[in-house]
Image 1 (spheres, rainbow, N blue to C red):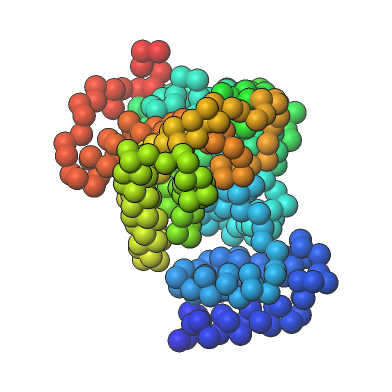
Image 2: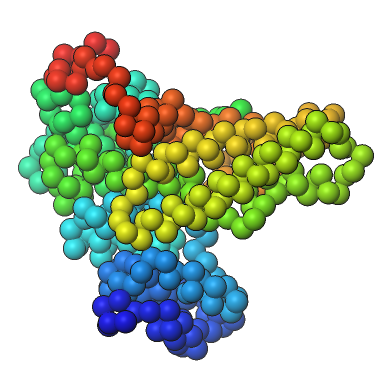
Length: 397
């Protein structure tokens, strides 16, 4: 292998050098993570100096396995999933050199949490209809509007934001993509309590928030194209996450089945077998999708994976409730709290059942994703649209 693209042996050697220089047992977790990033072992496929070494993406498990075996700390990826899965690939593709240097290291280390300011009360499934306005004021943009369903907004330091910069253009045009400082005094975050009792989501009100033009990603008016990079990566990160066999929602059900024979019935057995096989198929399909990513950016296949993820989670959690009978009706904790992450497998069956209802909404509704699969994977004709060439300001609202 050339210097520009190190192989598995070189990555293993570099990982062992990192462990020798920064023993996990005696090194603070954040210091170890910073050293790992600087050694190019965070995202091995990223460029040198930005957490990577320009190596094939498929070699990341070589590094991860060696570090896990040595007891090295990870960056708590569930807590910073939006930054890792959505903000980082967008910054890498569209960011300036200065933006990449400023944002990627603290993002990966976990020092700065990110959130996503996309959906609005009047622009959810039809995201391109968004009405949050950004008006140029010298070297800044003044942003006013409302966003909704914002995971981790109560924890976030930064947000990826799309706003309308030209209402005279059709809705898919005239949108610009920004990095928003969540500590700006014009940003107000309010909790949205969910059916689980928690307020994992938020609504965000933006009042004359000033964003420097230096925090714009991509060209003015090109925000919809930039946002597609974010959305495609989001669906891969939700639906194509790496899991071991019986990882995810199928694991607790399978354990209950093995440990509680008195709950078994023939009908439940047949349904569990079907869902177990489907979960395994989805897991292996996710592995194949990640291998395809080595060759380039994610495509519409991620939408199919996210569709399967939502359906399976809802069916599996419903089966678990039925399997547990009266126990499945219990719910351990209705406390109103604002959690740092979603923990499907660490909570009880009632939580999994209720929380999985959101899987077919978050990250793109199943209805929208079905359209994407139909048009972009199966090649079916698009639905008729009479608003495509109409200026946003002239649309009925």
